[in-house]
Amino acid sequence: MKYLFVLSVFVSGILFCSGKPNVVVFLSDDQGWGDFSMHGNTNLSTPNIDQMASEGASFESFYVCPVCSPTRAEFLTGRYHARGGVYSTSAGGERLDLDETTIAETFKAAGYATGAFGKWHNGMQAPYHPNSRGFDEFYGFCSGHWGNYFDPLLERNGELVRGKGFCIDDFTNQAMDFIGKSVKAGKSFFAYLPYNTPHSPMQVPEEFWMKHKDNPLEMKNVYPQKMDLNHTRAAMAMCENIDWNVGRLLGRLDNLGIRQDTIVLYFNDNGPNGVRWNGGMKGRKGSTDEGGVRSPLVVRWPGKVCAGKKISQIAGAIDLHPTLASLCGIPLAEGNPLDGKDLSSLLLEGKWADGLEGRKIFSKWRDQASVRTQRFRMDNAYMLYELASDPGQEKDVSKQYPELANSLAKELERWKEEMKRELDQGNRPFSLGHPDSKFTQVPARDAKAHGGIKRSNKFPNCSYFGNWKDKDADYLTWDVWVEEAGEYGVELWYACREKGVGTRMELTLGSGKVVATVTKANPVSDKGMEHDRVPRQESYVKDFVPLDMGDIRLEKGPGELRLGALEIPGEEGIEFRLLMFTKK
Image 1 (tube, rainbow, N blue to C red):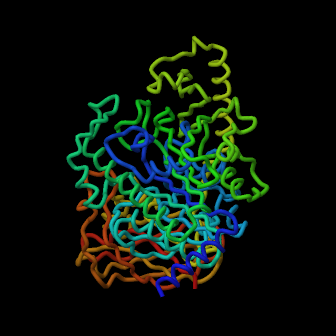
Image 2 (image 1 turned 30 degrees about the horizontal axis):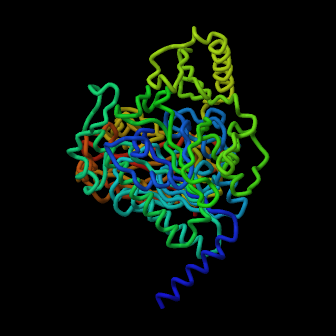
Image 3 (image 1 turned 180 degrees about the horizontal axis):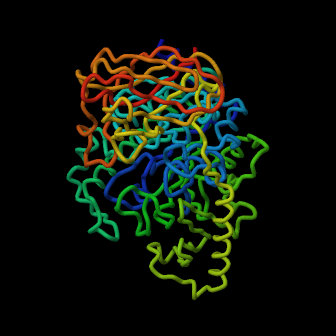
């Protein structure tokens, strides 16, 4: 039976590989260019990603955005993130405009099975949810960061579920299951693994931490006095956990017999989330300087992409959508013009992409912007640096190259004005009850607090509300747009002490109203700190539980969703995490 099974998998692989190539994309969160042993960092070892580079091509000058959600948007669309309406990392500003075509939609239209496993960060409610943007399967979370990485509350295709173990291991397991099912079904697949580490909180399984907790960190930042050594040690451990998971998934491709027919990519979403060794470059996460936006890009496709090839031509996340589509023989849909370029000739033939000899790549975050040419970077202050000899951007050479400096300054100013015109930061209500989805999650993250209610942390993404004491003055609101009229069941996820039992909560939207009484205490404490390797900045979490509030009738159109208390019998009512609407 064992040999029959192996033969079956082998034959399945042959049949499966007769179609278009598969694609696996790894995207890490807050991992810097320097956080790899392949770049000379001896503080850690990343053998699986290093081997990917030796078996494929690696880009020496690849650029992303200074922070998370913009990079994800640029990868998905092939366009600068401002064109897609992404201007923030929370409060709705991370949502990708609906007129953008995503890479998942491109591959799904070509018959691919599509799945995303990890941190989405481009919109939570449908039609911004990954299941509405071309992904058949989604497992993970949609916020910008998460409060606990062990057995966390996650979602599967919109429905809340409990994760299993450390989240990066879990996301990888889910992706491998998806790949296995796709192979069994004879479908080419597009698997996207947007990991959420080494983003804080700095949590990692014990075996990885024990290797690094006393790491002497021989490789230091150019400003060693600014380093948080334990934070760096935790980051190194988290990066090694990522590498281990990359190795597990690559091993699964081998076991399924589809190594030769699978394109695998690895890149980061921004610079490092701490002051640590980064090749001497200036800048870290949040900066438009070289160290804030330079990322590795490794592309492996055995037998097609030249092994060990190093590509010097500048490229960026905006190029991945058109390049992957071209490699897989998939036409791009007509629609918004792309900023990204097809780099398939670079990968397959070693030729510089046509018409890109004088290419420029722009970087932006809020009021910062810079522009990179093949040789120079002009920063936000219009100072010019020659990167090969000056990665730390210490010597302004604009007087040495006055014509170039003047030309780049004009182009940078023009580009900034163009992005300003394109970026609409107008009020966009949160969608509720879209026809695409049975579930709509409305979290504390997106609420406006009134009265004395307090958010658990200034960073809203994984926060909750407490200090609910005054039934008249204290309430929460959300600006929403009901996409489809109908009956919706409502769950309220809460915590409360024994004295809070008897609190009566009222939810209203237009003429719709539902009232429910808390009949069971949930006196849970903050958690997450037991897994932290260094103190965190983000909110801790709690084990919130659902209260079935009943059904509410919602009419299509705009309105203010309001959650208030009709009665608070004790000193304080509930602590609030989220509302979950389920279409009846």
